[in-house]
Image (cartoon, rainbow, N blue to C red):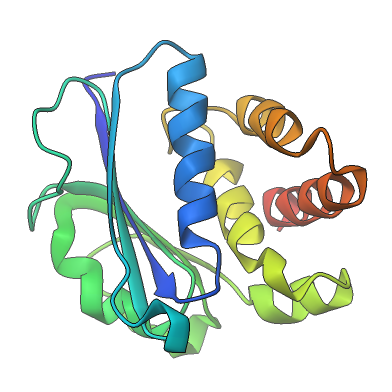
Length: 176
């Protein structure tokens, strides 16, 4: 792998920074160099939050427009705002109904993660459901679902109830 550049976008409170850290820690555990940068904006008021993640030999943490391999969108509206970061062969994984996002230029996988998270009794788990969907296609990301599960276990080992909920949400996205 030459490296991977990702944009993770959503609104404040959706766990963008949590899944960015999960991915970064997974890269580190694999011995890969990683750079991250976040723009919080009006995060505390439900505003847009964007995270840039680069895995591989890069010198700057920011992904330039037209260079991202993938966009993980935790809110349908952020697809239109951030798809300009994608390269021609880039992909999108979004928390959206198929009709909520019109995308002709890049392959897109959508999942309506909000009702799934509610059915799991974990409304904050949208982020992990979307991450699971991203890993449902082998080779899409620099890591495997098993490697992400191991990182989730490491991060939440002292919080068994949170761990159980996080793994259930992640696996729901994987199975979707």
